[in-house]
Image (cartoon, rainbow, N blue to C red; front, top):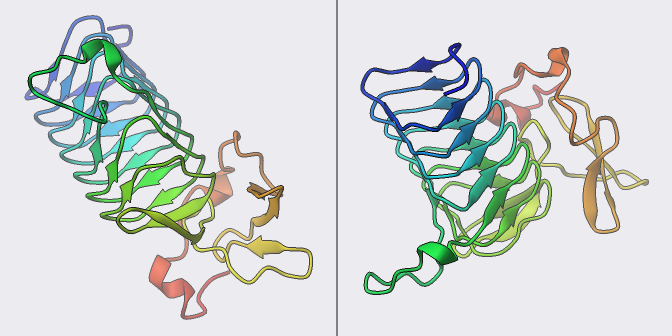
Length: 221
């Protein structure tokens, strides 16, 4: 391990040859396997398993009972909800060994995967996409897409603050009801007009100010 400024609960198991960034917290009954690289300020809830050679960025939050298998790469600011499922073989058979054929899954910056959702391997979840609870995702997901159902289908767009983007104006601009950040479709790709997707939120926008259910009652900014 290459850093002493992190917390590992005494009931967690961290194998040799693991990199853990400063400020990261690894809670009860987690297992981090050899070769894993974990960034700074991550939080792993109870009973999280990180497979061999998995790469995880900074400020990633993984809730209870999640296994991140070999072949998965997770970028910065990703949220994995409780008991969501990741895989690394599309056609598993107990009798057939496919350890050399693990498929790659990329979860890009700021993506959210809801509780009990399933992400079938070999796909990419785009930046700031939002996978609803219980969804089963089998294909690549665009940036900011809201995905719901089994199999998951796109039902709209979500802002970086996790609110549906609706009612585009005459210029096609949609505004987040919490942050005021503006978004627009450009060549079938949603982009934020006020903040580059690869930049962190400024401090004044990094703390939630409006509950999700309050937005519909006119309590947004």
